[in-house]
Each structure stands twice: as C-alpha cells, then as structure tokens.
Image (cartoon, rainbow, N blue to C red):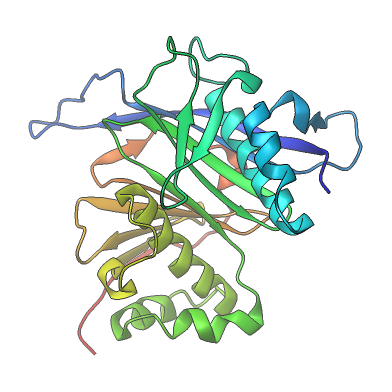
Amino acid sequence: MLSSVRILGASLLSLRRETGNGQSWNRLWLQASFAMVVAGDGGPQDRAIDSLLHSAERELAAGFPSAARHDSFVLGRAAAKAALSLWPAMPAPQDVWIEPGVFGQPVIRGPRAMDNSLRISISHIPACAVAIAFDAAHPMGIDLESVTPDAVPDVMRAATPAECVLLDTLTDHTQTDHASILWSAQESLAKALGTGLMISPGLYEIDHMELIPDGRVVCSFTHFAQYKAICSRTAQGWCAIALPKNTFIASLPSYLAAPSRLSLTVRATAC
C-alpha cells in the first residue's frame, strides 16, 4: 500500500470577476488554491503520508479492503492538504481532517480557529489526485479523468446528440480525449453544485465549447448557464475546474495547459 506521495505542484489561483460596468470586484473570497499529487517512488521529494494525514484519516485508510481503494483515498487527502496549506493561518496538515459527508463529499474539519468558510473538492485516478480549495461564497468543483479506449463507448452513451456534434469539432483530439473532456467537465459541475453524478447526465448537458490557443477547452452548460468548466490536458489525464461563468482565473499553473495552435468556438445546434 502507498506510504508516500509526491506533490507535483501546489498553486494559489487569483480569481477576477467583473461588474456590469466593467469594474472588477474586490472580494477576499476571490481566491482558490490547486494541488496535484502522484504516488511516491521513494525519491527525496516524497512526503510520508503520516506527515499529511490526520489520525482519523489514517484510521479510515487502514480499514479499506483493497490497496487500490486505500491508495486513491490517500492521494486525494494528500492533494487536499497540499491545496489547503496555501491558505493563510492554516493548521498543520495532521491537524486537519477531511471527513466524508453523507454522500461521500469531502468536508473540512479542524481546530475551531480555522476559517469555516473553506471548502474543498477532490478527484483522483490511479496514481494521481487533484484538489481545489475555495471559499463557500464562490463555489467550485474539480475532476480528473483518463478514460481508457475500452471505456469510451460507455461514457459516450450518456452524451446527448448536441454534445456529440460539439466533440466532433475537436478534430485533433482522440476519442479518449472526447470522453475525458465530457466526463470531467460534467463531473466538475456536479461537484460544484454538490449533487455528484446522482441525477440524469442530460441535466449537465454541454451547449458550448471553446478551444483556446493554449489547448484548454472551456465548456458551458445548457441548464446551468451560470457555470463554466475549464478543461486542461495534463500528463495524467484531463482536469476540469468548474466555476461561476463570469469568474476568470488570472493564470493557471503551467502543468494545467497543453500547447496547441488551434483556436475555435462552437455552439451546439439541434441535430
């Protein structure tokens, strides 16, 4: 079972919103932090999980019946601690517990002096996890997906005809890219909403995609027009961050942007 992790990156994200007259908002909650971790390999950059996990988290991890479930839990909690550590006056990682809520959603627990407006969103695939920490006043969600070729048909069966049209315009992307973009965008929205993928996938339908020059894909949603998802190709898979539509991230970490010379905008039409 996993005993150490490596933090690939942990970054503060500066957020910006504009008012109707073009003025920028200035709010303390216009900030977030992002972290990505992978399984440790015994190198000098590794962090022992005991230095990151609360005793309650270590106890929970020890009770999982499989190594895979144990490792995904540890990676997710390590990513969450790395993201939270960037916030001011944050207690030591071992003093903060990410508790599973009634639906499995992550809930931050810690000393009473800790800011109780903080929220966390976590996602993991085998050997990698990401997390984003944010203020409750500005909901966000994150998801990381790396769909395998044999899983593409199952993912695409949930796509609407309009979404298939949009994905087909991404001609330089593979079918696994299409499935990963679709799934990560929708699940990041589901996490921002607090529902998870427990309702009809059609309610998360994507109605617009913009492929921007740095290779990221920005999606908006038919039924949740107040949100968007920024999808970035990473070495580990596609990572989507859902956030309010009129919020802009000043700059994303370099490991969340894949080089590309393409730029296009497509809106779904009836088919």
